[in-house]
Image (tube, rainbow, N blue to C red):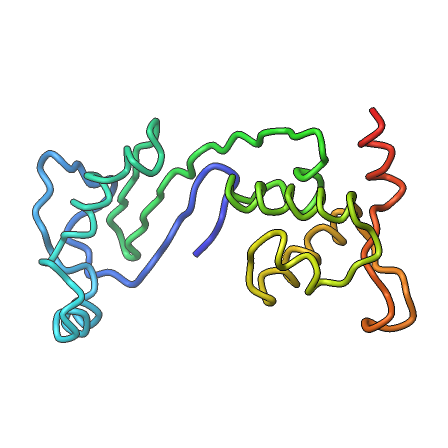
Length: 177
């Protein structure tokens, strides 16, 4: 699988039934790779042969509203699916900086709540913030790593038991604006 800036492209072995772009209007289901098809049929993971092409066309509008997938028949079967465009909301607390740009809205809200908790009560450890943000210990560690990677918070102290989390100078400057 190869990721491009605007699409995802997959390729797999193929017993070609033609050449070039597949027109969904005249598409006739035909196993592109009979060995793989038989395997998935036995597992019960396939609706019917060719259903992938049909389903991708059926559901593409929910995934990428302006997108149109391409299916290319040849020695290898290629499928290109457009990626949806994401708009990144900017927040005053800097949650969208660096490594956090691709986070979902729900994650950004949790990260924002965590940043606010740290700003209001600097020097505390992860367990103290878990109660405020209402996430698991593992999720809290991941969120703290994301905020550290984005240079919004830092850990100060000699050991995890005696140290705590603080806003970075960069973050404090952003909050003063």
